[in-house]
Length: 158
Image (cartoon, rainbow, N blue to C red; front, top):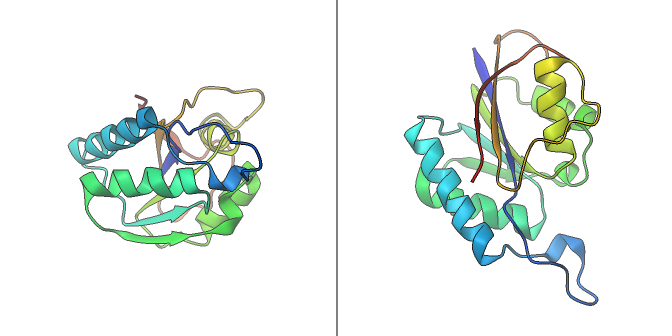
């Protein structure tokens, strides 16, 4: 089996006047959420082998707090995750099909739509992944990612 862990960034501060969306930091609440997500991943023995993270400040800070709990793992910032739709995220994950447990750190609506699409085969108007939510999807190792191929094996939110 292969696992895909989807982590939506934790709560972020609202943008200040003139601040780019990419530069929004985590709030104090978000920092605590990300630390709790990392602890949950360790407790569930779901430490990823590799992490691909959006370039936004809030996703990178979320990942940094999670790594404080899980320890260092291979990680890469991937610009394509920011504002990605499920199709782009599937293509990215498929390029890393050799990774047993891959984690993507990104944004909604892409993350929740991807979780729904891989699990149920439909993304529709699904809205079920709160800030710092974690969805763990399990699928057969040698099968390409496509709608309905995965089983939602775990879900956590702060």
